[in-house]
Length: 230
Image 1 (cartoon, rainbow, N blue to C red):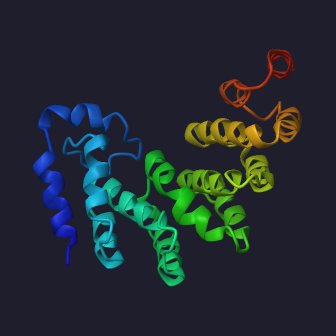
Image 2: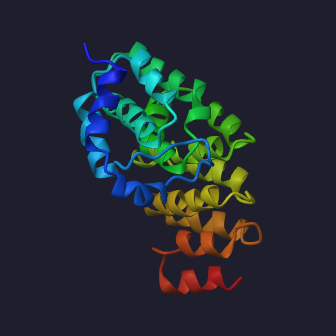
C-alpha cells in the first residue's frame, strides 16, 4: 500500500530548482512554506496516481512544510471526493479532515482545488450552516472555503447558498475572498441572472470595484454599465 513517503519521493523526482521562483509566485500563505520547484501540471498527475492513498497518509502530507506536497494532499482528497460511488463514511472522513486541518490549507489554490468536491458535495443533501460558520471565521481561507464550496450547488442550479454566503462576505477586506466573490457570484449568475443583479445592486457600496468588474463580466452591456456606474 502506498504511503506519504512514496508521494513525496515522486514529487522530489520531478522537482526542478529552476522552477522554484515560478511556483513560489502562486503561494500567498506567508513564510511558513518551502517550495521545491514542481509545477502544478506535474503535481496533479502524481496526485492522481496516488488517489487511493489512505487518509492517515494524506494527513501526513498536509503536515509537510512544502507547498507542492500539501497541494498533492488536497488533490488526492479531491480525486477521492470526485468518485460517484464513494462510501459515505469515507466522504464524511474527507470532509472532516479538510475542516480539522484547515490550518494547513493556507493558500487560495488549496481551497479552490478541494472545497467544491470535499466540502460542497458532502453537503449537497445535508444542513449547510457550517458554511455560515466558515464565512464568519477570522481565517480568510476558511471564509473563501465557505463560498467556493457552493459550486457543488451551483452546478445543480441551486444559487441561494452562494448569494447568502456572498452577502456575509461582501465587505470582506481580504483580496482573495473578494476574488472568490467575483468569480462565484458570476457563476451563480449563469443560473439566475436576476439574483446576481439583485445581489450586486444591494451590495454596491460594499463591494470593491474589482469585484464588481469580475462579477458583472457576463451580464448584458447595459446592465453592466448601470451596475458599475452606481
